[in-house]
Image (tube, rainbow, N blue to C red; front, side, top):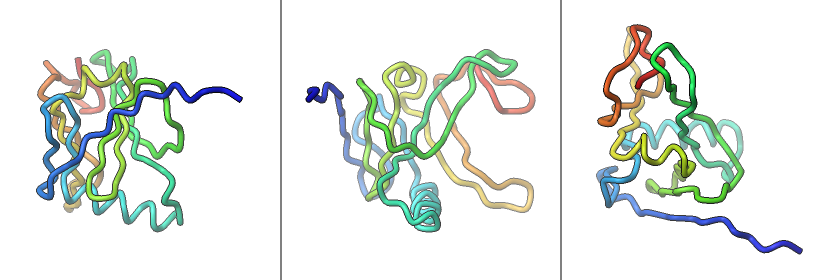
Length: 129
């Protein structure tokens, strides 16, 4: 039997969708509703939305958003009205204060990330530095 060494830093979100503490990623109410809808469609309530920063893209770093059932050592876990958002410890410094929203317009549909830490981005909008 192994001991669970996962560090789970959980932060509670307020009802407006803002998180307590500026070191955390923020999920808007619109994005939280979309995440809940997607999870309900999949019939899963055991998954969290993982937000990560990975090397790549023409600007050096790119975002990854995906559903995950893993709990990694050093994860920061934030609850937004029942929606769990998880950020790995390596991505936390890049995502502090970043706002994840969901846009549904004629021109664009999908999750967006407004990151105050990004000093620039590429023309396609898929990566930053």
